[in-house]
Amino acid sequence: MKSYLLLLFISVPLLLLSGCVEIRDESEPTAGDAPVTPSMVEEVKGDKLVIEGEVFIFKGKLLQKKELEFEMYRAGQKTLPRETGDFEFRFAELVFVEGAILNTMGHRVRFHVDKLNVSQGALIRTFPELTKAPKGVVGRSGGHLFLNIGTGRGRLAIEMRGEAGGDGYDGPPPTPNMNGANGRTITVGCSSTSQDLIPSFGGDGKQGHGGESGRNGGHSGTLELSIQKEIGFSVYLTKHPGKGGAGGLGGAGGKGGIDGSRIPGPSGKGGRFCKVQVDRARGADGPVGPTGTEGTSGIAQAACVTRDGKATCF
Image (tube, rainbow, N blue to C red; front, side):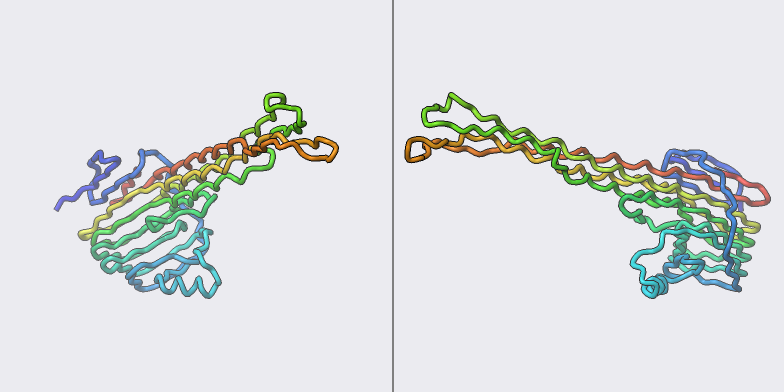
C-alpha cells in the first residue's frame, strides 16, 4: 500500500515523500534553527519499557506522576525544577499503551529504540498544554527530541511545545513625589470677606507607574526522527511556540493634594475667633499607570524526518 508524508503549515497542504508524517504548525512558519545534536551526559539502558498513564522525565528518570510527586515531596520541592539537562535512553523495545503520555519537560533527549509499538492515543510532548513560566520569567524552549527507531508500529502523536512566558509584574505603588501638592491655606481676619482672600486648590496626583512587559514565550524545540522500517507506522506532529506572557497591570496613581482653607484668625480683646466656614477637599488622584505590553511568542523550530536514508526538514 502506498502511503504519504503530509505537511500542514497554516492549513496549506504539501505532498512530500513516502511514509506517513503529518505536521501542523500553530504559528507563522519560520526556518528556525536546524536541529543540533546535543551533548549527552546521562544514559539509561533497558530491554523493554512500557509507557502507561502519564510519565515525566525527571533528573534522567522516567517517572509516573505519583512517583514524580513522591520524589518532589522527598526533595522538599513544591514545583518542578526549571533546569534542563541532556539524557539518552536505549531500549530494545518501547511500548506505549493506549492513551499513554510521555512529557520530556524541555530536556534535550535522545531515544534509541529497536522496536516501537504504539497504541491509540499515545503522545510524546515537550510540555503539558498549560505549562507557563512563573511571573517575570521567560518561557523555556521545548528542548530537543531525537528518536532513532528500528521498526515502528502504530500512530504516534508528537507535540513540540514551548513554555508560555510569565506575566509581567504589576506597577509599583506611587512614590511621595507623585502626590499632588497641597493647596495654600489662608488665615482670615474678622474684617475680611470671602472675596478678599482665596486659598489655592490641591494639585492632582500624577499617573501611576506602568506595569512590566510580559516575558517572551519559549520556542517549540527541535525534533529529529529517524526510522528504518515501518509497519503501519505514522507520526502526527504539531508545533506550538510558547505564547508571550500578559503585561502587568499599571500601578495606582499619586494621591491628590489637599485644598487650602480659610482659617479664622483671632479677633477682639478676648482673643475670640471669627466664625468663618472651613471647607476641606483635595485634588484628584492620579490615573492608574499603563498596562505592560504582552511578551513575544516563541518560534516554531525545525523538525527533520529521515527514512530510507533521506532526510526532510520543515
